[in-house]
Image 1 (spheres, helix red, strand yellow):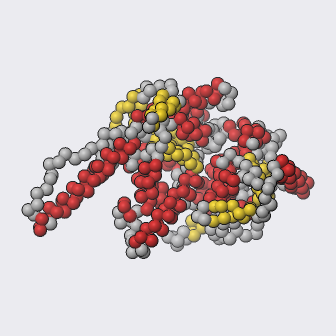
Image 2: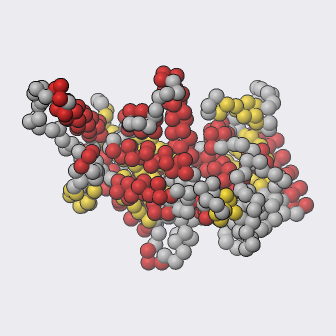
Length: 522
């Protein structure tokens, strides 16, 4: 089986040349790789998924099969890839380049004109070929995360990490914060962090990560903020230069990342790098494209037993509060379930509220919880206050069951509420929590997509950045400080992404609140 891999392309200033090579890969049969004195058997993604189909755990999907074959080929390149050797060769090339620069400066210095310089030394080269990574995008619920997980599990390297994008970004910000504090303590405020690579904290963190991993897998890649866009541009540029292989999933193709975002032109080089260093695969039926964002089977809905008609359009543990009777029933169901788990798992502590540890030495109060089993929150508690992914991650990784009450309709008038809700659901899903909800409508209709609809929820949201000004056509405006007039809020990347991200959130809510999910996870 043959596969063409584009290796690193660099400018002449970086001393690495561009070339293409034909790499021969093995079949999807199990192979072995060594780590120290141990030998591990790995299985190709295509074979691993076929085994799950054979045992009735997965439904055969030809679209997934096509992607799995590509992932299997990438596995094969990883097996023979010597990342540490590549980095050693890269370091020798860079050291030689620095030495040449120093010698040139000495040669140009009149006081050193009689100094003999070694200009005939053969420059070091890089012989290690770096495999391309993988970027898979497509509709929600079609198996992208599942295939990434299988690829990660069977990737023939021990130096690997898999993170959800929220956790990944949170960790990068935290590490940059720690390094900046360290640089400030050591050098004071006169220290310039961006004069060269050795002083750039983003580059230094990327170099640290490249020492830690050969393969970095990121689930649900998305870009919604200009600051994050600039960090990602520098971080991944250095990561790829250091020979790290990146595999990622997303609902959006690379060219649509940060679409409509402020100063997006500064982010475009990252998109070019992503397409150069990763095989881009669209998980969709190309013979029946139509609306590509809706094409494909959402297997989360299949698993949860949800139908498109009104017979079952929400999960088993998702309760509606549309009218007084339903609202009372929903509250009673949540009370009953909370009491059930209190009785089932007697607790030795009655501390209320519980102080949950969060990153950056913070804590958050959990007023209604029982042991590490179940916690109960209102939508207002979690999604209308200054909370973020680190807070939601702390909740998700501590409790097995999370109850979320009184979810309102979400719209663009208060985009931060919708954004927090989506982040919360992503963190709960990543931690495989079971979910109980009471809401004003079924998951598919919670996000109404414009600000003209009624606002259900608290009267104010101090944390929102939405401008209250409205254009004559009803479109909300947000002020861009670089311009003299407002920009349509719906065109900004952080808001534009909400409609795509909420499809994923609705799909995950349906699965996490289904009986089949509960039976498996508890």
